[in-house]
Length: 106
Image (cartoon, rainbow, N blue to C red; front, top):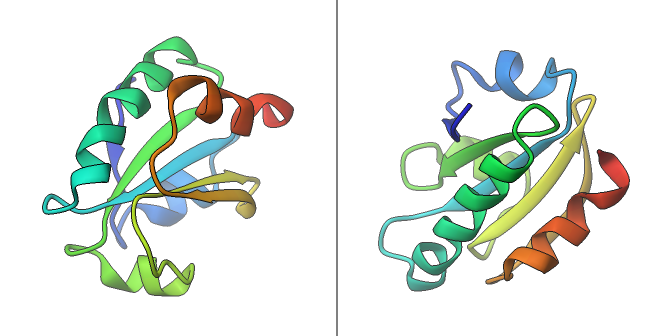
């Protein structure tokens, strides 16, 4: 499964009720570091297919979700498991750093 676009309408089903960990990428089109991180997140999604779900949250389209998680800087990655935030990272991360974030949850 490729990355999914997370919205208010599908958040509960795709993230909170998900039986596997979810990597959320909070981003915006105008954000340079977000554009740099996007291919890294896509590669992680492919590599860990079936072990994690990867969701993209466009903060301009769904500011309510960003606000509810206190997102004040982007890009921000968040690992959620069983509907709870396990860890976050703000700013660009390379693939090994993103994979390290996920290690203990998969």
